Length: 320
Image 1 (cartoon, rainbow, N blue to C red):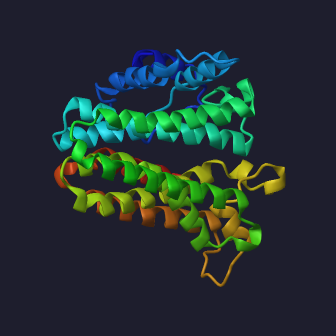
Image 2: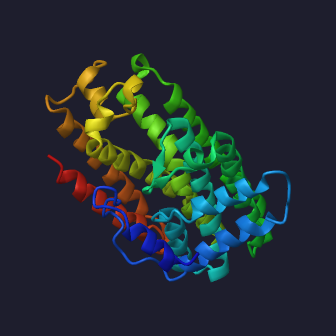
């Protein structure tokens, strides 16, 4: 599927379902190559014929065609261009990180019971829970297969190790999100879980590009920047979804909504009388931290995420 086809899919979304306008620069010209490469590697084992294998093959392609902003792929392409990577290496990293992210989405929809993603039925809702688990696993494995195309095989072991570390971090964060109780919720816990479940995979494209480009020492900056950005974005999402997430967990609300923490639990914290304003202040603080880290990356490798950081901060400030 070409990127043009994906844009056609996304244009069908209603205004309410459209993603927030924090990613406003034009997509990298190589993004269509990423789409084609992901589809190519995902279908590479389609010759395996086992009973009911057609269901899994259909689910694999179905999810990829559902579109998305491809933020992680775009981060890899932007950073790769800034640091002088070849187009092939940039596409390889972009494809790997995007496949990992989408594996997490497939599993996350199943765990949260979300029936729709991007205005389409989620994989588990359309094909069943078992197919969704296998589909997510397939995406995850395919991401590692993508790395086989990296030009500098000397750094490949380190790249694989970093991928595992960030997937592990995200897995622990997701597990905590699913099991945490109201009694355990504090602002510190909220920040820790969000940084792990969302920030880890967001930093992966920047970290892999930095490593391949010979800037391994800058990886901690990228990792921290993405963790702080994840907090700012999650709070922005919490504020947008306040009507839904303020419900109890039993009624489908989000146990990690920061407003609920501020409204229902003090835990000895000095919190403003206005929980929304307090949440906005936390978001802006972390977005500023993210920006400070990003500007220190070599050759402006974090410029695209810096753009997102600035846009999210503006959107947060506009919330009343």
